[in-house]
Image (cartoon, rainbow, N blue to C red; front, side, top):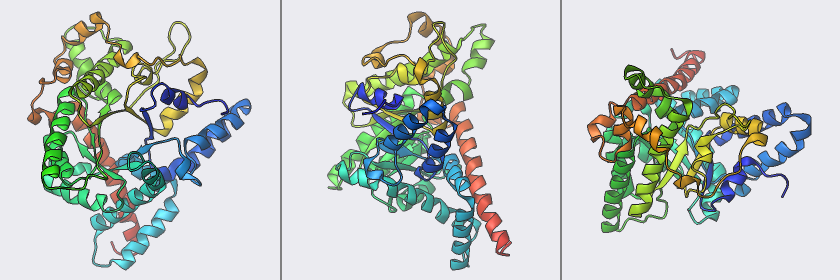
Length: 402
């Protein structure tokens, strides 16, 4: 094989690790072409070959990526990637469904984005015996506290293709949704999750759902469960820094990264110790400034290398990795088991925001709904959803319907 991509090197450390694409497959072609165009002259051929190995829209069955995660901002990006096509698509929907309003046409459009993305990875799903090739389609983040509405949407999304995994929020209601969907044999991805208590809630919801499914002899051929840790969002959107400042505790960037990593590692350890059938998924990764020895660190993959986990990587992060790959350290197969430095952990445990997130029983389900990072992320995703709704509304105006 030609020079390996850094993500190919990461996957080699543990054959059970999975690298996923964190965006709609619909945007990959334009992004990859843009990457090659901007590449240094001596790397253009190398990068082109690497990016084709990661995912080739013309030959999706041979992709290196084993799955896909999407969310409302990423679905909105898919529309922005080809706005004229989607404008025409929406206008045709409006003409064909004169009785439907903006929200209904939005939902039909969103389902089409999800469906088209899932089609790219369906060959992988079949080829792997339903182990890989899932695309995560998220229920509307405006309803993270409404089980009935989320369930109705989840069923509709799941009916688009058997390789669609439903993204369910880490709210109290979201874990009830995961239990119900698991009982129906529907694959789930627990998103908006930032804490060990949320991870444990997901593991327990899946256990309960699987018990019901087996009692009812539900076919589990399409079932999978992944638990997403939105790592950097935990460290930047919540109360970690403000609580440290109010207590006179100085947190370095390394301390913040270790807070995020410690939570993930503890969740991973509990899952492996208990033998739960879920798989941990790491997202929201960052590149840190160069270290003293000149290497460029991305602890979010370096410190969890070797784990039987999913790494889901958005275009921007892959771009950053490729820009600094020559300075990245080799991956260590035991990195996943490296504990946080004792002094760092002691410092972090003085902060309630971290202590409650780190201890398996540090939060009760009602507290999930008030978690700062969950509220902030749900608000961001809701804004993107409203952006899609407004795109649809613009087409209603163009059709003279508003």
